[in-house]
Image (cartoon, rainbow, N blue to C red):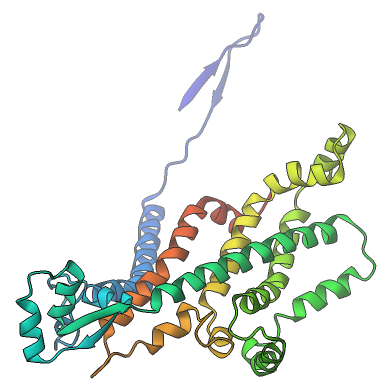
Length: 332
């Protein structure tokens, strides 16, 4: 492409040549190959999730079919068995129930599997426990971590390097190693099988990660922004809320997602420190074995419902998460 730029005055026109490089065929081919490889890897990684979704909507007879069925009539038997407490009926009882005119939708679905609904199961409450415990602990760990990271980033704290290393050292020990001591301590102070106990524990374990990650984002925010705001009459706290937090929003979103995933998927503490009242979904899903055989469609339905909240949160924060993981906040 050649463009002619005319300058003012008696000077002769200046002709500037702008060279436009075309993408070579080899570069296009390599780009297509990389895209194909990325799609293949993504498909392989998502294949177990796809199989869980298919299994969750299969009837019990389709789950145990050999060879496995890829095409089947969708059924909600797994979700009914998951969310309802059922018992196995004999053939005579099943025939009698089918002739009843007052059957609801859930009753008919349960009868397809030869079962009768007795009432709601405990899984809905366990999933609610997961939402409450993971949500509250994530909010606390990100909030406390944000204030701590700002203090380490903006103020001169004696021994800050040692303090940061001490905070980070809490992540070096595998959580399962301290499960028994924490169990004995919780039982003696009355925090065993309580929501407060798990919220405090998850907050403490997520706090070190939150402080270190958020400190990196706050370090990249120029101090001049806050100084200019304080010159205009803002206090330090007002500058923190109105200047720092909006600029660190990408880091806050990324930290929130990572802390939520840890608290949501945690298994060892939830298994050892709870029995019934505060039992969360991760240790509850493996206990869904069924009667007379493993009900894989019920387990798959529980796993699918367990995946949905984290997927929704990650999807809602996807823009901030992508920027936070790749670039961070504003750079000088």
